[in-house]
Image (cartoon, rainbow, N blue to C red):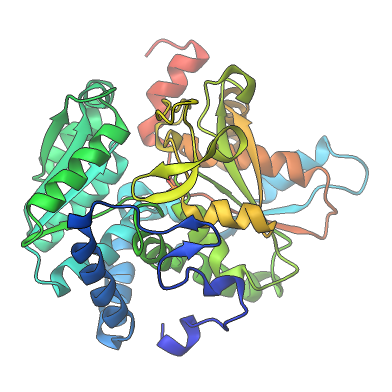
Length: 416
Ligand SMILES: *Cc1c(COP(=O)(O)O)cnc(C)c1O
């Protein structure tokens, strides 16, 4: 990627954030005074890296030879035909998948981790930290830390450690130290606070790898940049394979990194509609969900202003989803802005709908998806039936389902 091709016009949807990290009223850097110099330093190094072709070349090389990119773009013919059987006459859009589940480590998170560890190396940092909820970002971070030979500490809520033993063991195999966080509810937001504390204390040698398009500026922007490899590839591939741009993009949203990575390169394509899918858990009305846009209000979390799950006193509420990777209590600030201005639509999908879609994809395409993209697939089924047959939906298959088969067995009442 050359600098010229990634710099959008000033009046473009792709021109955000401003220099203080604001996407409209969202984003920014709401951090302690002590963190400001670190964040400004990161910002300087990030801009220098973006202007340095050698940085892009190394990123591209690792994407190709280590991650396995470009991931294929795949026309899901049997799923398309199956959805047409229950659609009104003449309806049933073509469904295409961006196969990011085929990446090394089985999801999109590695794209971002590679970008950030290259930044760490460039800044001369010799120690990596991260926080993780379900453990997937922890595993991706431990993976790149091993690849670059850097010591790595992963903060994880003590309750999450109990619930996510396989990922804890993976991180340990990869050489990471997993630190149980005993404060608060002992889950993701407590781990985020602990990681920020470590960063302040050890800034001279430590780089903090944030796992979604959130955090204080410039994190939402740089995570988006590294994940935009998804949308850049997809935009080229669909034009080559279908001869035109898609009518609708669909992606599941935890914090929103795979979604913004798919959407961003298409934001100025006025005829491409976009749909972000939040996890509705047991249903928005039950309060047990992870849908920050549908069921949350604006506030400050993790160094930025965005929609959050919080109570009347501003206490962060626990998110719920059958998919561990979607239960982040906030959403990246760019999504809050894209919702505000109406450029992207957001809907939600329940646990039950996601489980149905999970099984549908297994049986029609021979692909076991992660429960996160199963939410996107449920929305694809909803939309495809209402669209014309010559229309194209392109959805991000952001992770594979090996990690989720026990959860699914449990939810289906199957003994394993
Ligand atoms: C972590 C994860 C997500 C949610 O994170 P985003 O930042 O919203 O992309 C979605 N899918 C998979 C497979 C994940 O591992």
